[in-house]
Length: 329
Ligand code: NDP
Image 1 (cartoon, rainbow, N blue to C red):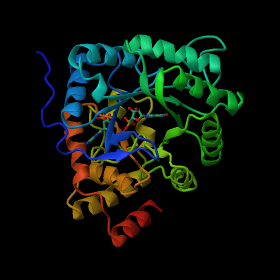
Image 2: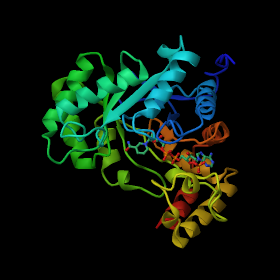
Image 3: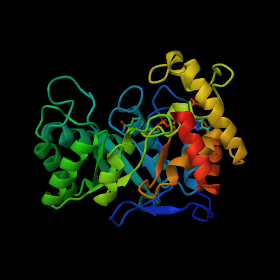
Image 4: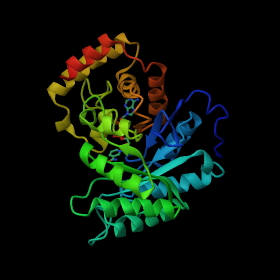
């Protein structure tokens, strides 16, 4: 059946400015790391994208290696984009990345200019796009000079193959250097994508301050710790969960008794706030205005709808924050 986006799609979603840039992002963005590969149900992937866009989620995040197999998420997305979203390209912010192993030989990994430029060309072909809106260096490269990697981002933006440059998984010190180099090149770093959630708080020890001071936005990935920060694992492992169906990036060993204790205690606080734990985990990130958008994943359209409820209450009392910090230790 032909997809017609909802006419009310812009009514409820807040759009927040990405650092000092002109770019605004929806408070929730959708990532295509899981559930969009050739191995997944195409109609389900399609329905997730429809539900997201119908509710104002205008930003879809990809990377060269998303699948499985690597590259297939971009192909699946490209197919859906050109059928269902035909005519809506200018309402979408599409991002991709390069930095992890993608093809054999010395040019298919890390951070050389050769790899970044070739990889983005491949991504554009897979998605059948002329340009992406944001292109990220996916992870720091300990060997390639940072100047070269940042010059590759600058080149890509000047060529019009990406509109904005970003970095991901950079620690505070490396992010500061990258931001400075990009500024000198005249292509500002607009966004940083770190792993950040209630269970992974490294971004709070320097990174967020550097981003805030330099007008670079933060878009946390895995905000639900891949599903741990929901009530789904409190009574075992459901058969349709990421642990049961994928088991690669998240497996049984990640569900420790200590973590379950914390999750139970957080779940109680969420209930006192009138939220589900998944909602509280997302709103807890959005309370900080250096966080422009929170990058969620979803295995079903209903999860997108559920996560949207986080936007109903993004303020926390001092008592709630203290109680949460005490639980997290
Ligand atoms: P989340 O932490 O949001 O986990 C998403 C998973 O949690 C879903 O697939 C689903 O898993 C479960 N879930 C989602 N919503 C709900 C809900 N409301 N109630 C219950 N369960 C829910 O994010 P991801 O780990 O998927 O990462 C999000 C995006 O971040 C990626 O798609 C990617 O774009 C980006 N990313 C970037 C990385 C980087 O290095 N830059 C690395 C990793 C991710 P299920 O139902 O299967 O249990």
